[in-house]
Amino acid sequence: RSHILSCISTSVFVYCSNICLSLVQTFRLGRYMIWKENGLYSSLLDYGFFCFNLMVDEVKKTWEEALEHCRETHTNLTSLNSETERLLALSEIQHDRITKWVWIGLRFLGDHWLWVNGDPLVYEAWPEGDQEHQCPLRKRCGALTKEGHWENWDCEEKLHFICY
Image 1 (tube, rainbow, N blue to C red):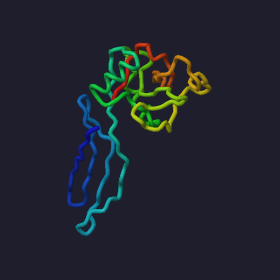
Image 2: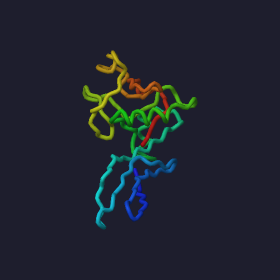
Image 3: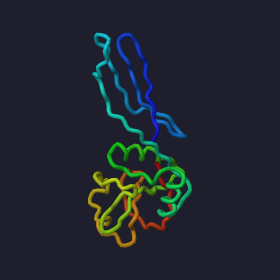
Image 4: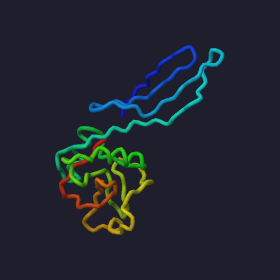
């Protein structure tokens, strides 16, 4: 997840903006302004920043095939560790040509749902009242729906998928 820091300087302040870079898009996600006081800089406004570049692949693959493809061409199947990340991913899959469900890097192993990149599962987006994901027999791979929920699916299904 590459980013650059772009700054504009005046006699009164320096305005900086973090810019995410990817092969597909460039977008700004954070910015801050540093005020000059008596010739010295002091940061008055500081906003959080992170780079989150997603690639939706429009070739349908099983979960394992999708994982292998992402690791060969990008980084991994995406993990969605917050509401912000879920909403960013959701905005990427709203095209008609994308399947109703897309694979994400969520897998049920050893009686637990885990992210394949090792991130802890601190945020969850299962549909309210859903019990099926708690003890899946065959549906042990996670998918994001176009409605924004996670669902567990049979890993052999062929779906589109999101890499980051």
